[in-house]
Amino acid sequence: MSKPDAGAGPAAPELITEKIANLGDWRGATLARMRKLIHEADPDVVEEVKWGGTPVWSHDGILCTGETYKSVVKLTFAKGASLPDPSCVFNASLEGNARRAIDIPEGGQVDEAAFKALIREAVALNVASKAAKKTAKKPASKVKE
Image (tube, rainbow, N blue to C red; front, top):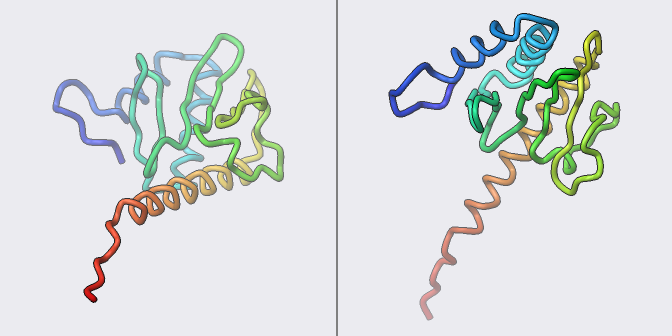
């Protein structure tokens, strides 16, 4: 699923597919594999492209971004510090108050079940946060005396 755009240019899923193809090396294969796992964990995920071409996966807010560097593919979870990670999948950006990341070097493997669990936890957190915001915005009902 992709976020509707203003009609200019290709949709986000096509841009992400193109980015993966253009990488043409282990980084493209790794990003494609992680993208597939994200979709398996959350079939309703929305794909976007932001910040100069960075793939972003969202569901009621950003779940994670997929950045490619020379030596790693980095998946950064916007609210990663708030997610349970009993399998210790996060291995980067551990010092921050909000984000956590997974750096995958060439040949690196990620526990697929644990990664999918992180995606589902991120979705649940975003859904709960959105629901809490809606509840907080509702005006208190007026009681007649």
